[in-house]
Amino acid sequence: MKEKIAVIFDMDGVICHTNPFHSKAFRAFFSKRDLAPTDEEFAQHMYGKSNSYILSHFLKRVIEGEELLQMEDEKESLFRQIYEPYIDPISGIVEFMQDLKANGVDLGVATSAPRANLELILSKVLIRPILGSILASENVKKHKPDPEVYLTSAQNLGVMPDQCVVFEDSFSGVSAALNAGMRVVGVLSSHTIEELPPCNLYIENYREMSFEKIKDLF
Image (tube, rainbow, N blue to C red; front, top):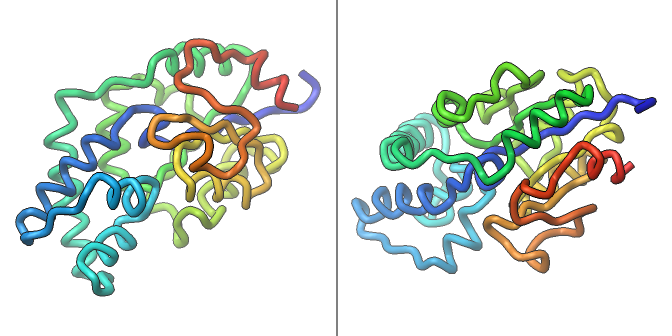
């Protein structure tokens, strides 16, 4: 491998299939406020979106500042409580990451989720020692589809955007990676191929993934 390659993973729906548990947490949060969003509304307005967008959309007013922080904390605490007993990485991802690392690939995680959610998952999915960059929502000013989190990850890993492959599962996440000028693998955990922007490759899980397949993308 002549040129360095970096692989950056989103977290929700990419490392772990968390979206059903986020739905449960949001349902509990909204039911306290006499709201009952449908599955379709969640698919359209929750997956891959920031909490400020989700809360503002469903509560039908701008949620920002201190109120946003309080509501976000309430909802994410519910999520962690609901999800903790069920944390399980998507099939094959840990072995795939180890294969990449063994072949000299630099690895990062870039999520729109709060740091506490990331820490919870990293306490059960033991990949922290092989990660060269770990970014959560607190580390960026602009959320996906803005490319900031991916461009910052590339800087942290000491590579150019065109040396990076991103694994993403949401429309805004894939868009962020494309906006950063990176190659993208679409993880079909939450959406169909038709619901995502065009990716370089699509996967259901990581059982068939390897360093060689990443190299082939270049």
